[in-house]
Image 1 (cartoon, rainbow, N blue to C red):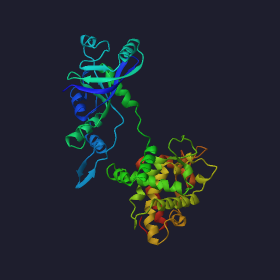
Image 2: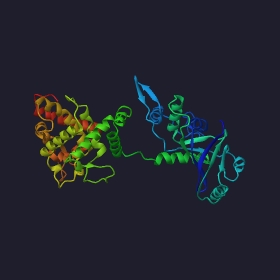
Image 3: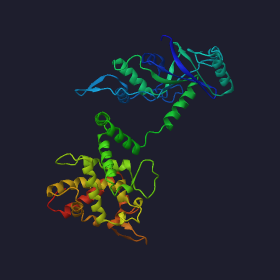
Image 4: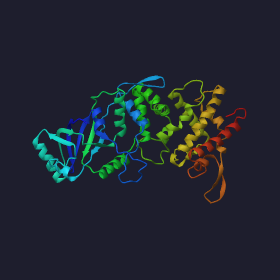
Length: 423
């Protein structure tokens, strides 16, 4: 590796030296490495600690950061030309004591030099190291072939940069931001890796749906990219329906918990769960594609019908969180039932936003029943709204299997009410 010289911010935190700088793609490839875990070596204390890089994640990052085109499945896609403000984090390890002593008191690992623009800065940095204090200065960061920057966080971005460079989709002068810790021993480096990865939190699902929908509204190209390349089409469609319900001031919104809203029994289902529950409607056999506003009106009409048949859960004095019907299990179940009802309403030539149509189809819904224990401790048949109360019969039908069973039971009731129609 040729000597690398880069302008840098020299930072001392509690006596530990780090630098913030940038490397070009060729420099990044030459100066960095990944300490990957080898399954053949098992729990060997000298084994690596990094997961094996995912080609899929690297390719996804490459599409975002690239500045060229990619041909896939017979189509040519433009790279996103995204920016990379977040730095790759790496560490250049210390070696033996004799080499550390040769670094003019800075305690730098082999192959690393720092040239300060101001001698006073040099003295202040030395003082901060000695006192385990803090200081920031500017200088020139110099690496030679002895220095290996072991990537702690960002191996997929680093791999994407190499992939793009190999395919001429990223210029060689693109400045890749890096934060380099200087002189951490390997054990401390592993600790940093663990805390960075174990404490990092992904964006909450509710916020993901909101942010994706916001981006799609602002940019039609972004919407197409999210749908086609990131497989977010279903999520975006559901979020668009929720948006339409908000715009139309749907009466059911008060039961849906918004992002960052505290969990309480005043709401019963999170935004993300509601959006996911709309997915079966997107695959329903319809004569034409419906707009989000049309879907919102259909959903409102459907739940109006349920409220007429089972009024107690919807009573203003009741807490939505006390009813399985209004939680994820109930909403997922009923929206799958709605997908079954739609072709029947279409066959009748009726309006899809007419609550009476669904009230007729679900007329036997209050007959749904099961054996449970009442307040006296006696077994009895529980039906009507009480079937759907928390800790009652419907609470036994959790997960996908439980929802399948509930859907099947309600389908049977629809078939009974409409003998001439196969659902």
